[in-house]
Length: 252
Image (cartoon, one colour):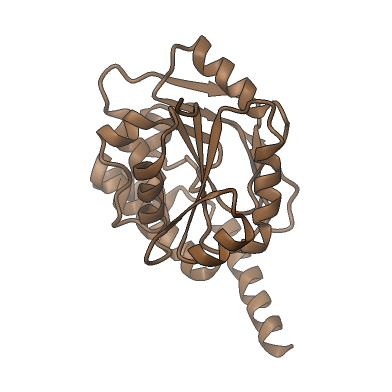
């Protein structure tokens, strides 16, 4: 019998955080799930976790790793996690399954999430899945708080491998155009992650790909508007903090 959930861990880096993620998955009261680890270091992970299903990819491109997860997954719903991501409750998957079944198996389920900024406490964030929020590029670049029905991922050809930072956002824009789309939202925050630093390269990639995706799906006006409505002061503070960290590390 196929599992109800496929939890795909994208082990690009932070392998020392894998035990934290795996522990919270295995402690779930819902047991109809499979865990798939996608990595370019298959032998090392298979040695450490012989009971897990490990798939190998040639490089660390996130969209390629996600597509490999889609290819091998058997679950009805897929979730993508990074090492360090974790469920906040042992009842997380049980709650999700009940929500999904009560909602007659929607194409997408997403939940609230915790947003962190430099030197700021985490804040619970929620918003609607509609054209306005998509045009504003508001959906987060992470995907730990989204659960995709597998046939929806397959029907749309998975994630576009030309994107390295925001493939999930591009997929959501394509999914929104699907006929008879059914989406369910939960305000309950189900997952969280270990705080990780963001490199300047990642910040630039995030901005560049957001503009390309908005231009692709909504036109030039929305791409330009997204640039001008950003909190540039906040981004500047974040950049200064990252530069300071880089200089401190280099001087140690």
